Image (cartoon, rainbow, N blue to C red; front, side, top):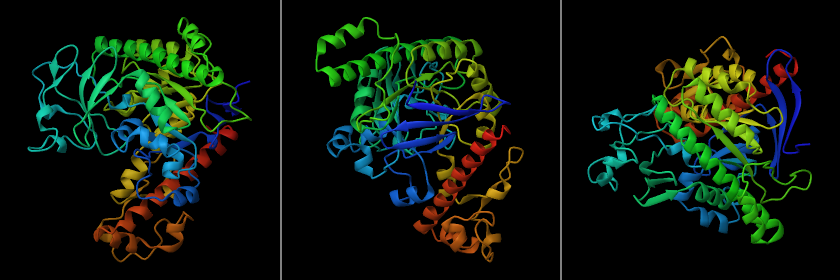
Amino acid sequence: MNKFFQVNHVSKNSKARIGEIMTFHGVIKTPAFVPVATKGTVKALTPELVKEIKIQTAFVNTYHLVTHPGSGIIEKAGGIHKYSQLNIPLMSDSGGFQIFSLARSKRNSVSQFFSHESLSLPSLQSGGPLSKVQKIVSTSSPTVTRKADVRGDDQPLVVKISEDGVKFRSTFNGALIEFTPEKSMEFQRQIGADINMAFDECTYYPATHDYAEKAMERTHEWLIRCITKVRRRKVGMETGQENRSKKIEKNPTSNFQLPNPYPNLSSNLQFLYGVIQGGTYKDLRKKSAEFVVSQNTPGVAIGGVSVGETKSEMREQVKWVSDYLPHDRPVHLLGVGQIDDIIDLVKYGVDTFDCVEPTRLARMGTIYQLGKISPSSLNYKLDITKSIYKNNLEKVDIDCDCYVCQNFTKSYLHHLFKQREILGYTLATFHNLWAMERVFEKIREMIKNNLI
């Protein structure tokens, strides 16, 4: 029996399920929301506040942590949990999310950079440390960089994508950093998150079928290399005999299983998720799902969604692969976390979701209203910076019992944001993540009662 993940109930009306993911740092009750802690911190919150909200897990970013402070320093500190004092199960991105395909023609210009938030690159301003790397090279043709809506504020510059891996320019100091499947696995080992993502290429939108297929095949090849790297490390840990790891390389894809993690969990035990790609193409999505699931990694992630396509297209991509998703392993959806999406997508068997939206919107003064959250309504966000709240002495959210809503008014929060007081970001972030946790509690209850 798979002790890493346990399914406790499947809805009679969909593929939605209630389960538990077991890690050394705790149990994640699924479906679960995964706040983004890109650089080893949930922005504006102390670890104690994270605990008070009852956040179950968070997502750290390998690229950013390698850039600064460096995965080696984190390892010396005892791993990301000890370094950050985030004593909850943590997931780590592979760095692959930062890859946006460079297969563009010469006629593309810098003005065609893509981002959900901005069409500018501050790091390319005149005199900046990266001002000399505006001309980027891909394996196919000269082109410009494209930007992903990354889980953080810094967006790296891809210098080169090859079959071996990817080279980035650090947004911190302009240093050249190379990621390969093997290096990504090693970086993630040093960081020490409980759940690791295999190194993949997040295909840009809108990519051609030809490029999406090549990127998918590259992702599959990289997955095999990630598996091989992890197996070699596991064998070395268990036996200390390198000759056994060489034998494993002969058949790296068959019956891949990590050691039984429960109940005798180890603090250095990590679980690998393969990542499904394929762009917006049904045939590629199905092919990728079949391949990734067949590798028997402890978990599976769906990647390359919410990168510029419409909501309808994004949901279709998840629907296409839903019949191929494993019944006995957890499924993570990368980069999706709007409430209406979550309520619909758990129906396809997705267990965990990560997204920057609740925390990013909080820092912009957008406050979730719990009483207005429903599958049929998107009108649950309140802009506390509007002048109408200056004299409003009602609690921040009349339907919420979190610390913020028990103690502060809309007027006070409005005042903090207008005066750019840091406390405003903390209070808004606390409330939004509290609301997300309560939403997921409700979702689990609805699945239990076969209402989803």
